[in-house]
Amino acid sequence: MSLKEIFQVAGVDGCKAGWLVAVVEATRQSEYLFEPKRLFVAEDFAAVLSATVDCEIICVDIPIGLSDGPPRQCDPEARRILSPFRASSVFPPPIRPCLSAKDYKTACRICYEYSGRKLTRQSFAIMDKIRQVDDLMTPELQKRVREIHPEILFWALNNKKPMQYNKKKAPGRNERMKLLAPIFPNIEEFVVQARKPKEVEPDDILDALVAAWTAGQTVLQKAKTLPDNPELDSKGLKMEIVYPA
Image (cartoon, rainbow, N blue to C red):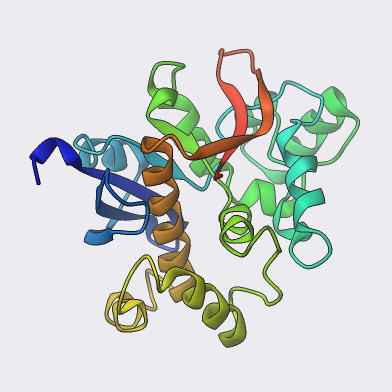
């Protein structure tokens, strides 16, 4: 097999210690031959980009394109798809003017002023990570760094049916590992060995791996976006969620 037929991709998920990065090797001959090569934690998103320069596509679980007021089209579409079980896992990201806020009260005030809605606690909790990505993201970089939502990816893997159980619980981990097992052999042992309770939880690992698989599908031109024709934000970034076709 020539080197050109082998490529690397990465899946990235936020974790307690920063960003969990799964670098995976794949072949253009198969959508199911994927081998984890590296799993590591990066302190910030600049470090993620620096460590993945050899990856053709990086799929990251973080909002990238940000609205200045109205909801992004991709978010209500994702909630509709994941109803009734996992719709609550898709919460509205902060609008771009909120990124200047240093505290939750100020962020809520700005959000309400521009959109008529308050900012959720969940959105505020990941705002630092959103800033890290937004500070570095350009339309050119977005060709390689794509936004995903893990529950949408598992929905696609599960014949377009949302996961039944919460990913933090054992039944939820088991149903997700069952879906990933044909792609990543020995995934159960891999998750046990890679877990670091103070830094990385099992669901972080599964989310990073399914994101890496989706990055591979994107390279193979077997991916779609929510919505089909994404809007652009004020920075020219696409407001979209990528998922395997």
